[in-house]
Image (cartoon, rainbow, N blue to C red):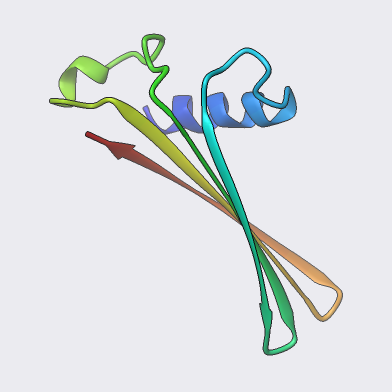
Length: 84
């Protein structure tokens, strides 16, 4: 399920979410010689998600994409969350 959700968000980001209903927020923070960018994306459009019936009251999936830039390096991480 985690891999399906991650793939869903990766595809949606690559297509600028043009076929989806979603909420998006981006924050940029700097300090201690680094810049951190966080992109938050949520959607309740989960009818496609197999196994959702096993999660009581599941109605939203979320992804946080974090990018840190420091010392001419870039570090990226993603986190997936399910919400009821």
